[in-house]
Image (tube, rainbow, N blue to C red; front, side):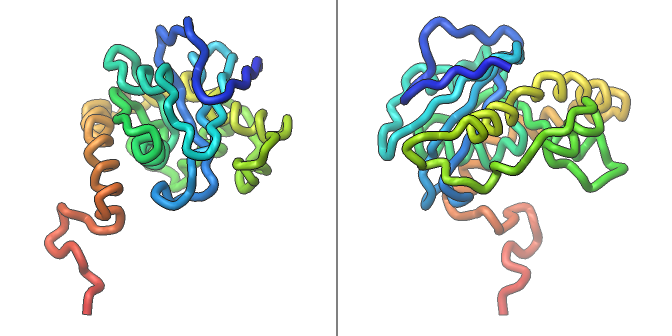
Length: 210
């Protein structure tokens, strides 16, 4: 794995012919509260670009252009979370998108284990470490361990997508997954507008109200 560290934006000249694997690291899980610290991007060629953001410095024109490029598929694991924080901080809507967690839920109905670590272990025979998952991503200097952890989160997404696509096709659920991927930008907007926990499709949006 080849890791390249950048301040504030991707370098010019990068291409993503088979899609761009994308992940983020923030100070916490609440997009409106916790600042975005890092974005990871890979073309699936075992090279990973880490973009570190200083507080409030979210110009990143090349990263924004990539996220909005309709000719480049963006690959995520749990896209809803990463897309929400990217939209909140960078002000852009990622499209088109693919989520390996959603694909796994439709393809691997024989298990309730759909985390990235579980997918890599079963489908790729790769054991990835999650030791740096809860760490200070806002630190002035990111350790080699932090950088490697962040890079690993996008390293395998292209291969996972290929395997999951085969499984989805085998089970006849590829179209359903694609429709869910199409809905992701709307789901992110609902989250940002305050409908993260209320299901607008349910008969009663607030089933636990007194």
